[in-house]
Image (cartoon, rainbow over all chains, first blue to last red; front, side, top):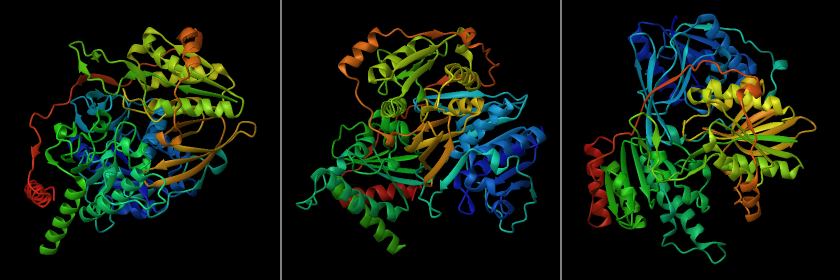
Length: 344
Length: 259
């Protein structure tokens, strides 16, 4: 039981934001348990990225089989490192890749795994007691794994403060060998996500979201628009919400109703069958606040609701309510923010 | 081609949940429904099986309450339904669940593809799916938005999935395990005939003895379940003209240091 391991997910040459939060949580645990913090970095540019991570040391593998963090070779390597070095805990970002990797390796090792972790408390016997949302956030669970072997945890985005990156690139980095060779691997990545990527909704500090009310746009659709309401809503997302989001450096979210009506792509859906987010600021525009939307955003720190209907359920969740026409209020807000930025 | 999906019954989305003194979850009068993410995996498995003249089998692991979800799956058009149950399952975790799931798939013997919905809303996790693949020794690909090619004869699968940073295309050999997102399809409504057929269907029950497995000792332990603290304060309503409302909001967000 030698260390706290943090699997550090990277994308396009840097550690992703949730990796920095995971390193932050790992550093707190390592200090508390008086154990070294070891970052594991796999794939392209691993060595360079690892050198500037806030860890006591880093284990890296840049073998080509690990490019784009393909699951099977990453899992085989992770399992071997855990078996050899028996860390006290292994933390990873609760992303799609992070969850797949830790679940696979936990099955190999016979280790406990808890996901969507939003709080960690080390117990005197070394067990890590965690809190996590269950039942779509309607209930909160306290659970713990088995301290007799490495405890695996996947962390929720924006639940832990990020570690600061070191400027001098002086973290000791040790290379490790891969476990699988290409012939052992049955999956093949045909097309990787574009290097620029999109702002991940889960990482956004501010989210501006639109709902069914987006169709009440006073702008007139062209005569050839197949569906006036859809055109109005799409136009509103692009010309009313996007300028506000740009002013705030925010990501764009949407309710299920807006996605199902074809107003915006599913990638933006926040809620039970979409993404779960917890930004510092969530601005809900024309969203009534159905319970399944609440499931995706209720842990946001400050919630602002803009809605015509003063009885909309969203106002029972919001900290600030602006009753009125979003097509008047949002442009006023964008203009006021722009003026403030100019004055500042 | 033979496709398996696993499903479960979960409390209706609108249900208000409370925790009883013994730690069990109550949902009042609210109904149990198919785990919301499973609507998409059920649709995909049925549509793929229909398209290729194959079979779609749906499996639930756990007590009788999950027959609700199985009957819904049969009503939608799944060909077969099975339930695995054993008193020992009550205290199991993802490792135990995956042990049973992998044994069921192995026993069916001719499975090409296992499809899950993205996660189970009650446990708030997908680890049991990934671990099922691991125990089978099959590849796992999660968050699939589109099946681009499913060739059972050639043993190849190509899918598009949605990572946090965008689209990724992968292929792998079959058999394989995938999980699907909401944008993969539009689930059908059960037909009247389908509902009638489902209500009459008898659903075979397999025990752990039938599967010849013993459950591993659970590694994780639930210590407490509670309702998150409710916010007592009401929203502060900001009135006035749109410009005044905007100004009042910015003032408050600055004071809270959100801006």
